[in-house]
Image 1 (tube, rainbow, N blue to C red):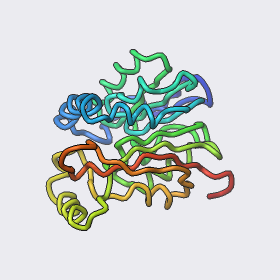
Image 2 (image 1 turned 180 degrees about the vertical axis):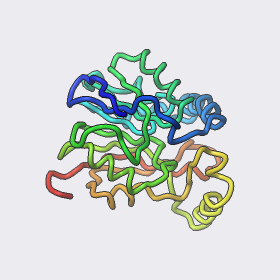
Image 3 (image 1 turned 120 degrees about the vertical axis):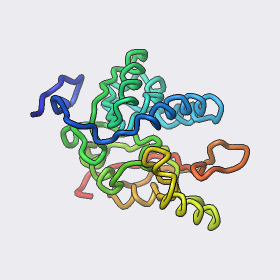
Image 4 (image 1 turned 180 degrees about the horizontal axis):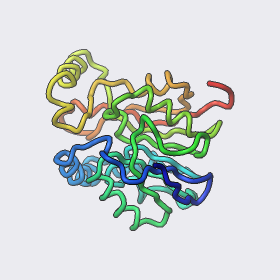
Length: 236
């Protein structure tokens, strides 16, 4: 049974009452990530990247895979509402607590990126931040983001993916077939988020590559892209 929760603008958010099971369940990794991500923000420069990612946003925003809510503090005041979708229960609890500490209205809801519990064309912008690596169905998740954005709406993305060098890329593929997804909550290191975004019908308007952390030895998850893409006004 579905229930409707009021939202600030753009219609109600659809939620399912008494879900029988969370779509994602990684409690041990979630607890580790909740600690590690705070350290990465402070010591690896991720906090500054989050600020750049979200600068200039306004209106109604949907964020998929909100994790423990570290993006929330960086949303500009021009944002009227953030609907933050997080499938993992432990991280969702952290995100709800983080949402209470910021000035921008944040509504944390359960749900998976592959089936967003919101109406079509109801958001001015969407945010995908270190999440496309772990969604179960990447094309479907991006198709959902395309669906819920209004025509002309903007997708902001900060994602890690395939390394440019052949050696590291081969190592990433081995990790993805073996231990990495099991240890890291379903994460994959060798996906190509930029190509997937374009294949979903978005027009990439700005992008730059970066390495996280910037100094020191490269990790399989160090190769990132930061950018913006737009949903067209036609049927794309």
